[in-house]
Length: 479
Image 1 (cartoon, rainbow, N blue to C red):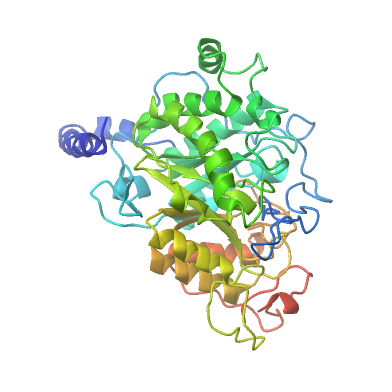
Image 2 (cartoon, rainbow, N blue to C red):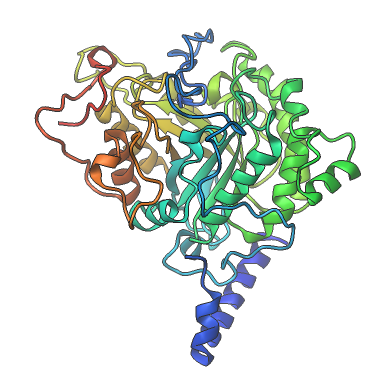
């Protein structure tokens, strides 16, 4: 179905919905929905300059270092009660056929890319803002999969989109496919019932090449996968793990119109700055095309977002050989303490800053590529240090001016600067989380999503305004 056909269908369904409202209130009531740098992905490994592609250290935010986060399938790491994935295979609806106009999907409808810009179904440029989960295999990643938490994210934080980080290695989907898929589907339902967009993140970290056998075979040998998944695998014995997974997701959820696909979030350590164009053309582009092909069998217009080498910082690499699909976008990731967005002299140090990533992003945009920042944080690329609110605000303003949609990292319940929540944060908030349950970074993310002023904090809280000023002692914030 073309975007225009979907548009007309959407208009017709609105007319039907209005008629039903006037004819029968009871029917209407029944219609309503229910109710590294991660360390960023790649965080801890993200280089500070385009030529520095050697990992800079351990990824502290990937594996909850010293945390109580349990790996998938281990004792104490069960999905929060009240949540439950939908794996039955029937066509789901989640109330999106008659969306509430006050929800993100009700406002924007089926998305499309026009002239290098993400647009709503009527062709108006727009910007999505939301949050990324932490790894769904860890307790401090899937803790948020509750009705109450998603009520707070939808109605208090006003998130347009939720990105679900489905790590493949690091104890994730490769090791526990059916469990991680169930958590992913739980998240899709929780967000969709509230009219939010969802992003399916095939989250790669180590190894960094999405064509590595560890990724290509992930999920193919679990007999406990849903029957529909197993049927796809059986019918297509030559398909890779990501092909089967994304075919399953597109077949089951693509008709909803609110699903975005991210088939490899952060390719890394495949090549270097000098051969980035060749790495894209010879390795990454063919991989993405293989995934796009199976998605398009069931979802002809869904937004598909492709990563680039160097933890999705070589954003200009596809300019010479873009993918031939009108609704493909490319992702750029940054961490404010490591990558600055300005061009002028750094006001805090008096010297020129590390601005190459913004220059690459400008180059990609000016060439006509559509850019979506699927992951960013206010910390250093390690996931700690800061938060660097001044630098982060400069990036947020830049993305606003360029119409770049974004998801902030992350909804981790972890003692880490990039985490939006604390160890004591309740999975069952009564409408909203209390201030002491949300980190300084989390309060900043919430304000940026809602369009509120930058939060102000007490005088005794020190601000980290540059990497040299970072103090690793917990919450450090804006003056």
